[in-house]
Image (tube, rainbow, N blue to C red; front, side, top):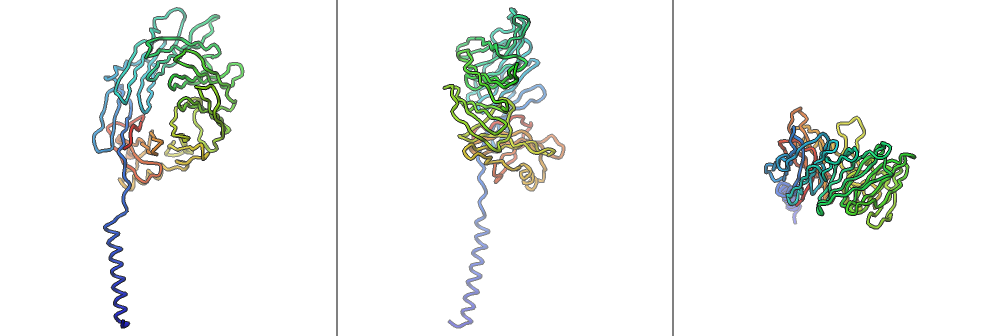
Length: 384
């Protein structure tokens, strides 16, 4: 081949290759991440109304339910709203008056009771309700009564919904003023309190079905927090050690160390597990625009595997670049199995507009859902 022809061949080859590369770049862009279809239930108080907003990221309007009307909420001075992935419950109390309302989010079935177990009509001794909680099987009233010598005694009034029966459990070792908090899981109620004489932490486990104390655990002086994972009670100490107590067998079934786990609690706290992973709150060093973000602790790896570094500033920057809005973040919900995060947001321009940001721990996609009300609690119900 003559040299001039060879040069022409090389030039033609180069131009053809360049056009192919450019053509591929234009015709085959990097595929965008597929955003899953996500179903959410959110809850908030709007003035005197309790609202439920069910949201799907399909472009449709949220379905808003006025829970005051649906459940017939009748408020007392003290109250609580308990939300999880399957239910929402409202519990109110004042002196000896009590009210409980429960909604199954899967079936839509509701339950309510006014004056649990006729407690307000009992006049044998002065009594006062300290709290009310419940689930699909029970309503529980921790209360105090005046015993001999005018001393206050601590007890539980248990309403068994299935059996329509009431029972009392008295805890003579519990001093009402030393009770820190409670946690209900299935038919087990955990009560965290301090020994009056020594000040050491104690945790009593009450079988609500049988109406009896199963076990009282003497915790380490540096006890920090505890949470239920089904029938297991995970107990964490400030030195990063932990033990696991099986409430069914009455035995400790695991112990270990969790270096670097963020501080939870103090006392009993609600949690979300997936296998040997626990959803935790990563607290930002203050002062900061952000208070906390979700993170994932893996007990097999003995480390934070997601959310170990602050990512909310980066998410804020991504949203600002895409929309021009510098949003501020609030409460969040997490689906631990998929790593999906739903965070409430409000626009940073001082307006009252906002909604939910959907993303994942890798921040490789995000979606903004503008809503008519700012959610206070968010539950990720389903991911498709």
